[in-house]
Image 1 (cartoon, one colour):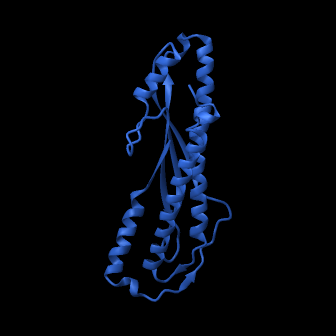
Image 2: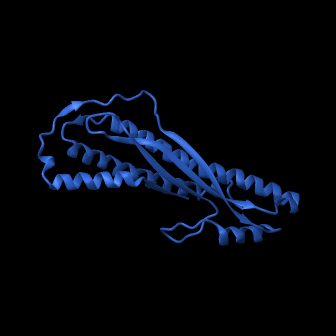
Image 3: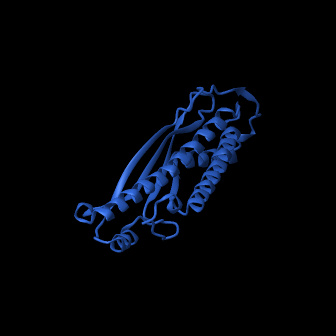
Length: 206
C-alpha cells in the first residue's frame, strides 16, 4: 500500500500564481522565450528509508494478528496493512526566466513489521517469515519504483514545456502537468496493488 505527498512549496506557488492572475498580471502577452536544456539523464534522487513496528508470537496465527493490530493505517480509509509505503516529492528550481520547479528528490519511507522474538521460534516458522518478508519488501519497493518512474516522466515533460515570458500562464501549465501526473501515479499504484493482491500473489502472504 502507498500514499504520496507533494511538498507544500508547490501548493503555495500555485496559490501565488492564481492570486497574481486575479490581479491582472496574467494579461502579459504569452510567447516562448526559451527552451529548457534537459540534462540528458534524470537528476532525480531516490532516497529510501525503513521504519519498523514490532510484533511478537510463536505461531503464524499470533504473528498475523499482531500485524493486523499494530500495522500501519491508511489515514484515508482507516484500513490496516502489514506494510506501507509513503512517498514525498521534494522539488528544485531551475535557473530560467520563470524559475520552474522540477522533481528533485523522491523520498520513500517503507513501514514494515519486525518480529521481535523470531530467534526463539521454530526454524520452519523462521523460514516462512523470512520468505514472507523478502516478498513484502520487494512489493513495497515496487511502489517506490513506480513513484520514481513517474517523477522521471514528469521531469521530462517539464523540460519539454517551452518557457514563456508570461510566467503566470507558464506556471499554470506546469500545475496541470503536476495534477495529471499525480492522478496517473495514484492510479498506477492502485493497479499494482490490485494486480498483485497487495503482494500476496508474489509471495507476501503469511
